[in-house]
Amino acid sequence: MHDERKAAQGSVHEKHSSPRGHCFPGSLRLKQRADYRTVFDKNKQFSNRYFRVLVHGEPNRTGPRLGIVVSRRVSKKSVERNRIKRQIRECFRVHQHHLIDRDLVIIAHRDCESAPNSELRNRLIKLFKQLEN
Image (cartoon, rainbow, N blue to C red):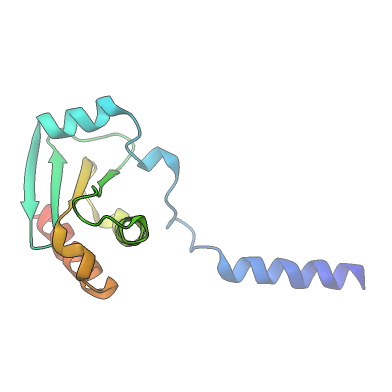
């Protein structure tokens, strides 16, 4: 009986885990100020109504890495800023295998605050496709 409970608990956790290879570990994040500075200094830019993507010119060995900038100018409410960051992270997590191996910084614009999640994701996907070309 005790083993049955463990088996049932294991299956619950397996349902909620992300598919293999679609995770967002710390190695794919820009964490240090110097990494951000490098991307801000040497970049190629792509933008639309909601986002600007800065791409560092030199390839990485570790795969694409993501940095996110959502300032208080975008929204004074931290709930909204966090929602935007969650959408960016999730879209990157799902599409990371199709991106070029470079450092990216995604900067949110003010229009993001009023945009629905689906629109934010769609616009990010379009920007990711521009990066491939």
